[in-house]
Image 1: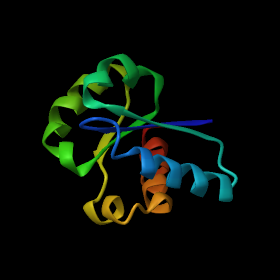
Image 2 (image 1 turned 45 degrees about the horizontal axis):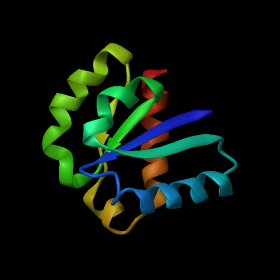
Image 3 (image 1 turned 90 degrees about the vertical axis):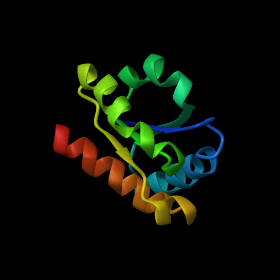
Length: 104
């Protein structure tokens, strides 16, 4: 099972995208756990996931969160603005799976 964490300022704005990603995973018969959290929960959650995707509104934290995820070998990346704005769950899911595969 793939474990994907989305992270934004409050955890709310990514919840719609999480639903779209779950739907895309189900349609593609991909077993995935996809959850959203606020940045304040990052440290307590990061070790339970294989990848972290950041909402564009917190991209300024990318370097810091990437360093904090290193001990867990968890890649961190920013979701593309257009995919985020269009709530393109299929593209964001593909981005997450690609990052997981590069680490594996």
